[in-house]
Image (cartoon, rainbow, N blue to C red; front, side):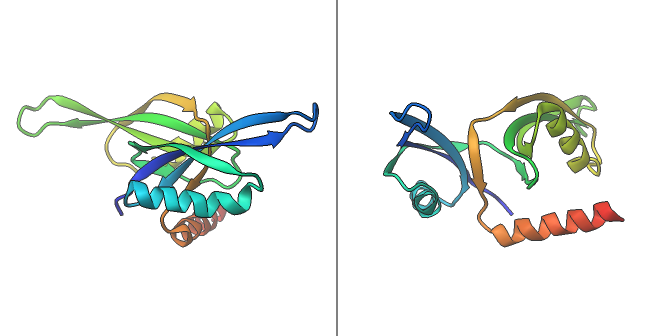
Length: 160
């Protein structure tokens, strides 16, 4: 399934419990949608029940993410640059193709381990070039039921 990922940034005011003053918060969400308009609509639909204060969407942009690996025990989202190494059949030379993946984990080390597990069955050689923490709060896939089924399947396989 082809995904079109959009990063939606929102801004809202919240009272800081420690100081009692208003503070401005900015958050980013990754949303799978077919257009900017749908991404904005899905952002409003998701965020409205989550945030009791007034908010605005300040920015929407497309994001080049190849795969998103969900992990419900992770707290942070990490962007991983993965390079696949394959031989060009015409020239016989090695070619490298870089892609960006997003993975939910608790630390960079945890992200690296989870990425290795996710890509363990990939048949062509690959290497992870970078892993960096993102400011993404949550990811909204187009079909959440599909993601839940994938997670259940992984849990069953891991328990064997």
